[in-house]
Length: 28
View 1 (cartoon, rainbow, N blue to C red):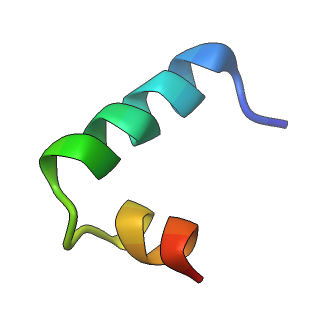
View 2 (cartoon, helix red, strand yellow; view 1 turned 60 degrees about the vertical axis):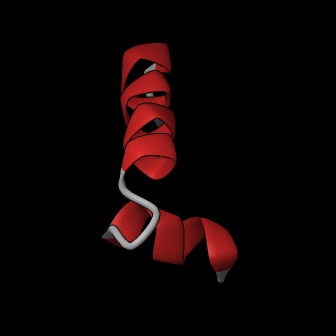
């Protein structure tokens, strides 16, 4: 399961790096 820190970090990367893998996962 994801820790809150991991979720926050991925959310931050999603905001700052819209072309990152994280963004692709959220858009999927």
